[in-house]
Length: 555
Ligand code: ATP
Ligand code: MG
Image 1 (tube, rainbow, N blue to C red):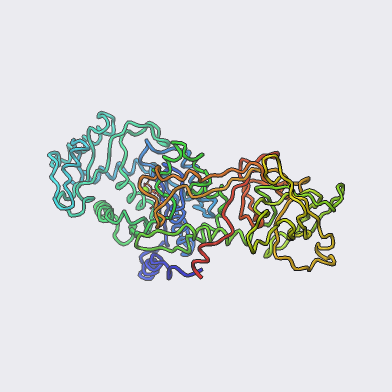
Image 2 (image 1 turned 30 degrees about the horizontal axis):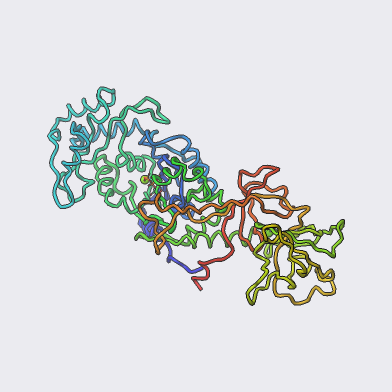
């Protein structure tokens, strides 16, 4: 694959910082999810980046839950986030924290700001605050409460905490500059009242810090050296710097924010809000639906952690937003499975074949190789009745059709050359059975094994084959010609994104398989065992097809 980035600009910044002696205690990054949804492929990029930089530079990476918005958060998300990061192959060791661990400290920092005359309690409503804020071209207006004394502010803030006011009645705001060209600097709200149960602190608090207040302070409290975030936070940086400076954090050692472009993928959405809507309104079966771009969805789909890490490495880290072709992610998955998945034979849409010159009671076990790079062998049963793929037979084939046709010959992979002698139809005129003869000297080692036959097809022996349900997936959304999903993403849902095949047949070697194990079904693609599998009911998901549009496009 082509190189997409030359190095990583964040690594260059780290190198400079170290050379200048700015990180005497080493590099310290963090991954700071809000536990209000499951992680998706965009988060994987941030995880690989933050944990990867820490690993590469002998530093540490914290996992910190930015849990300052109790109405949207839940422990289900806290648990799934940890499971997904571990599955991706990263460890925070003992460094797992919650912004809610710091609620007392954050409250004290807010008091300190008030004491310095740098924050005030405002009685304006949310709507009034918005209209007072001004626009990009017009300065904002001071709130009439902006000039409250320190004493009054301290008292009111304490009473906010004590629960004397209802939601929305008052807020605490930073006192900066209502005429600043940067809207974030126009007296950002830093505390709000919310009489809401928090999944960790329970009923202890009825005021909660805003993200813009809690996030940079949490970083500072944890000694984060490089606060890496996505581009939309660029204009928040002056506020973060103002806040830390106002509270006396040493400019040399306090966290420095570095922004990078978020990952956008073609054919899918990576907005938690939208993903949540898909789940809650039952457009998909859950957060781990194999069509979802969530880590849990990709895992169930059969994408491997190694492939996702490799993808994140390949796309690199950029300063400008762009759209990455999902074919590139599929390419990484295919590459990994090509090397690691065992080959087996499965017939998804069967048609029966009877080998008329093969004795009814005979059965033999033929040797077959499992994987061209990793080796290994298994035995395949062969007997008189087989299944082949419907599309591997044509009654009236076009020229250059090298599969089975009336009077024609084809090689059965790992077995004999067969010839189609007779086509049996059902009452509706559909092909019910193909009666064939086998060249019984043509299996490996036989006298006619080397006979030149243009087509080779896969098959399974009917008597021993295992029935299976196979789920085939397509993109969840229809897109424009560039792969963008329209804003009205629900209207763009692809109605044919899931096709379920109830009656596929698989060779018996997969009998003792377990959820998560992947195979290449010869000629049909890569498949993984779904967790819905039961001992008497195999369920497979197609991971990806065999054709690689990305690799081809790069040639
Ligand atoms: P929200 O809209 O809920 O804030 P979010 O996607 O920002 O959604 P967070 O839980 O705040 O979700 O994200 C955790 C971290 O993952 C943040 O540092 C964020 O910058 C990063 N991140 C989120 N989405 C992407 C993406 N598409 N590409 C790269 N990084 C991302
Ligand atoms: Mg966020």
